Image (cartoon, rainbow over all chains, first blue to last red; front, side):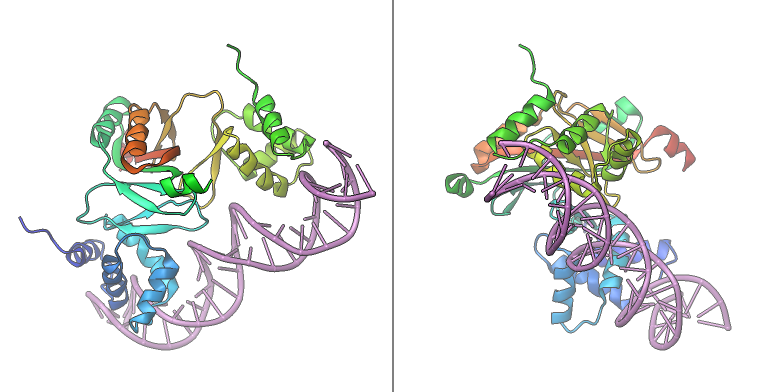
Length: 146
Length: 146
DNA sequence: GTATGTGCAAATCATTTGCATTCTC
DNA sequence: GAGAATGCAAATGATTTGCACATAC
């Protein structure tokens, strides 16, 4: 089975919602899927400028909720005063292990999360939509530096 | 074994850091431990005012990092534009299940998190300091309302 | 043609900071 | 008495919004 591209997913979402397909939104989405790893609005805006795009930050801020709503992107909380994001379409579910010293971020698989979600659904009658797990610590290097 | 009170824990932390013991900080801490559940800075400030305290928001903002540093309080992310907090001293570890419709927040035990942390420590050489897990979904009532 | 989307600049709002004063040690 | 902590008001900085113009349907 071949997977739909992120652009296809987004276009179907747009059509279903009677929204409009604009080059700005698709430029932003394409750039997001070219970024390896996490990004914030500023970084994304700069990368787009570098490529000659004139997309404004306002449009980025207005587009991100759409991408999140159709499951292509999610917020990542690094507790540093602003939001970070990452594309999640076509990726294995993962969580983040962040070093409080140097800021390094590792990704790891989440064993047992499916089971946990099923348990919560049964126990509390919820329909689960998603979850986030972050772990913080000190990496080996920063432990020594202490 | 009798547990130290939160005030005792905080005073020891203050002394150890050569900081100063002030009535403002202790009022804030006491109020936090009288609040059942989660709070944000505004709510906390209002509750303190109601009790006749003159503590400013600035002092609350300056005190919270201290409480977090000594393990009495932690941030909770509800993704609604500002931080929420909760006291964690003397509480079982728990995570939050939040309804995207009505905002209800349930707490649940985190089975297997100790094991996960041990695994990450071994696998990546990290000294783990903490973690947060949030799950979102729709509660039974909000599912019907859909 | 109409309603939606965009860029820009201004507004918002939580949090942080500078400073003069007050309080701990 | 020196260094910290406080309250206040002003500054900051990420995000949001109003508006005039452009564009998708």
